[in-house]
Length: 136
Image 1 (spheres, rainbow, N blue to C red):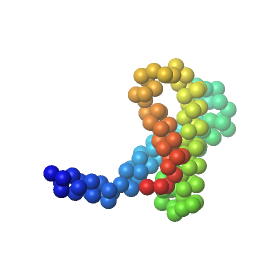
Image 2: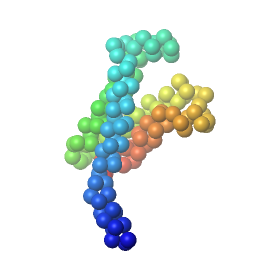
Image 3: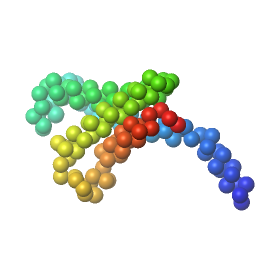
């Protein structure tokens, strides 16, 4: 039995880096999709619903797209620049998610709606990559 446990542990130790890679792609792709959903620029939905200026609404869409792309690309660039890119993208994600919670989802604090939403996991992903950077 111990031999089987050791083999399982060895197997997952060998592919440990894939966990961060899958998480990076999941968070990155989510932000890319959220950003692209706001195209063409300026995003009329943001302008009308939140009364944003066309420039600010476009900035939000481009920031979401850029954060997702930078997070993914940063994972493939060697230290220290890739590490900096990952943390920069994570910081952008955290700032965006705090604003989303404060502006678009004020009624979610602290409810089951918050903890069953996609947004909380995007926020947690941002925190994860801000702390971890490119370390595997």
